[in-house]
Length: 602
Image 1 (spheres, rainbow, N blue to C red):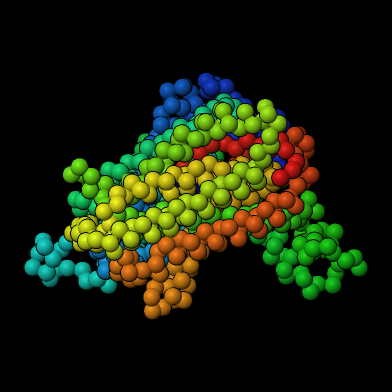
Image 2: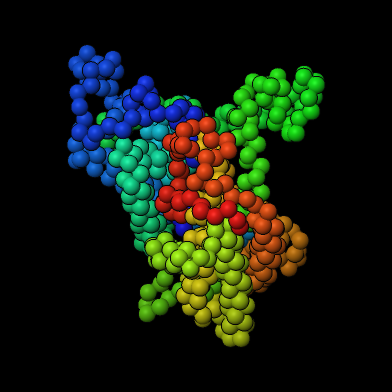
């Protein structure tokens, strides 16, 4: 899951990698070198004949050294994901029970926190590629992350019970420090998630593509382990034991992640920053806008305002670079239709969570953590990915059935629409059960809620459907972004795709505000008791939005023509369409390297 769901949008492609063909004169970072490190007599050595570790761009002296740094990176990612999902798992519950916030405000905070966590990676990737380098960006982000994470257990401490009340934080102070902590966590996770994946891939890429694919397979597995622990063990502790301990665990976890990163510091393959493609795209756009009223176009009409940035029309950029930016126009419409998909996706930790609070949690004297339903999302992903890749897709291909990228994305949209429809049906029966008898008095974090006698496991289908949709829309979306863009623009395009996650979360927050304002005085999402609201109507609204979005997607997909990757890309200036080095900032859904499309039709 973007557990994406999902990683952020800090994917970037360095200009040097994208535009410089391999040659004997290239820097060591672009050479294929043996696993066993040979003597280096270059000027890069210090007086003692050692290569400075901060600028190390050559492989390792032994397999043991390489294995050590890869394990450090994988464990760093595991701890980071455990931290992030431990914080987000019961965020809504903490806001309503500990900070006395309304359901609407709690949902808004959840959506904004998630959206920001997926927006910041663009900045994190840019800083790493242009200023700090990946290691420094990850390390600095880890420190910021820890500062934010350590604030949360402090806010949760019941000072009133531990003292005479003179040192108790009032509600306003708690809210301030909690939101400050979430802000720092969002910044920290953004800086890490945009760089840790590609930084790990750098440690293996001299061994070839299969080694990189193996790394991302394990990267994906470690992400799932971290999220599974967060949604089960940590979520249970927060809900049933104490938020202090439940928030202290992720704070310690991110501290461990930072320490693990430092353990391999002297052994990493660590490239210096070489510049980001984002910079060039931004400069071309800015120059085009500034020259809209310019008359120095040599008397020639332009087809696009972006042409004004071309050298032929008095601009500062080569024609090929401007054409690459113009190519975004054919991909962006597809991405825009994926934004509502993420709005529905992020209901798992917001409205689905609220619904879970109104269902029976106790089974055989054990209270199920509300967030534990996310485990079914994770399970279906782990099961379906190998089944689809090894069995279903090859079988369809052998039968001549073209299950193209856009068809897969569209199928995922159908599944996510079914998820909210199922959630609406569950809500109808949940409320009917409460109204037909005596509500179950359910205690969650010392607060009493009127709940239905229907088991929380009734939510399994809606979580499973979202997980299945992720296989088709999320992972295939990354594949589409990678394969349908010029080599030098792949990082930008993939970053734009992942940014749709953040925009979808922001859209979810906006919808909550609009719906409640429009449904006054009978709010669909009431401030206190969801049993007096109309959550099922909100789910049906999301289904209608997704259905409308799906039909728009069909129109766009029908008119779309694939770039065939077995032919040279029209705007690819590198030999044989050689790919540059990608900054693959990926989350649970992003943990596999995409394949390329073989079809030229929708």
